[in-house]
Length: 386
Image (cartoon, rainbow, N blue to C red; front, side, top):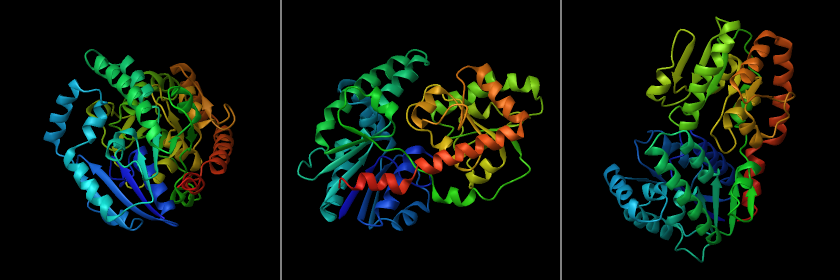
């Protein structure tokens, strides 16, 4: 089968959740199908990206979006009902490039990731199409608006309403629709017939899990793209509210914030006790160097890849109810759950104090994610509908 995949980002390197999900699905689909990839970018592309993607795709087209034109479209977006993120990523020039790409690679099926790519394929009514909503973006935007100051909060609430409306409008134009977790599915009450397809674990991480490290450089670890607002807010919550309680008992405990593109807010958190790494080439090495992983997510939607990675690499993990609603691990068995600074700090301190507890929690958490999160299985579940 000829499959066309449409993305709003170049899925390499894998420093963001949507890139990781897209890359691993494409890699699995390419084993049985010819995959033509059309992806957008608003920034400089890694020089290795195209070659890396051509290893798993029959053809790759990377469409650069002009920053000036993006600003013009966003300004015009004040006067049309499209979500701002759809206006951001959709251009007439890119549409023409996509049309030419489709003419060269006439597909049997089109797979779009995120509603921001839907505009490019809406006019192709004869070709079967699938849409991966991925997360409950309209709900996530509303949550972030609550913590933002005016006028940003007003714009976020407007975007949330536009997203909710657009999510509903485009649903009937796709033969199959996917979402990353049951939690996200339940929040999108305006959508019908969503199929839950979670994320998997990178096989390379599974190969790395056996390389244990007796001596740990970091007592506590948090990872993620450090320009993504939910991660920024979680990092601030961790450093400013949770770790002071931990430090009152373990004053020498070292916290590591690892991930690409840390914002000035995140970089300002660095101190003798807080290491901010920026991009790391081998994230598995960072996980192996940590005693405890914590994901104190307070505004997120979707399934947290960071938790899957940590647990796959035998790092005992602590998180919030909000994040675990998507992960669905057993509380106090496979993961420890807390929703207040004191609860999260207590779990971290108990793990730092008790090596046997760390070992048992890591073992059970590892068994859970290995048994339940497979890229190969999930990609196959989607491809059965092609």
